[in-house]
Amino acid sequence: MRPLTFWISAVSASLVLSGVLALSFHFLALSAVQPAGRLWMLSVWTLGVMMICFGLAGFTAAFSPPGVREVAEQGSVTAAIEARREASRSHAASPFYNFAGWTTVTGILLLVIYFIVWLRSGG
Image (cartoon, rainbow, N blue to C red):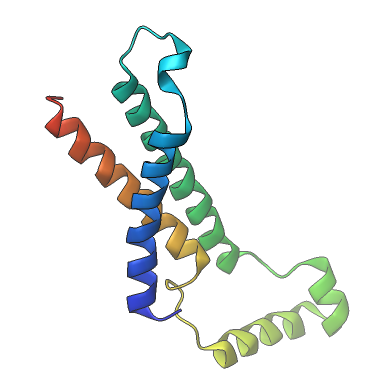
């Protein structure tokens, strides 16, 4: 993914997700003690943290050892490691501008939206 597309789509997605969350979920129907704005903020915070966790889990896949299937296909552990290195060299994609990076950045932007609303509402 190109960097400009990456950042535009991450910012757009965070704004759209927070807006859709505000419009689609009926916070007033919960009859909760907290005001609807606080429940929306909690939902935005939770969505942001979950997206960060899923994105960071995606980043860990790059550091996982070769699996049994890869070793069986290549014939040895050394050959499987070498095949994985060769595939990563030929792919030549950025380790950040992928879906894991996008998910993490979108989650961080949702937390930024949360903190902006939190500060504007008086903390």
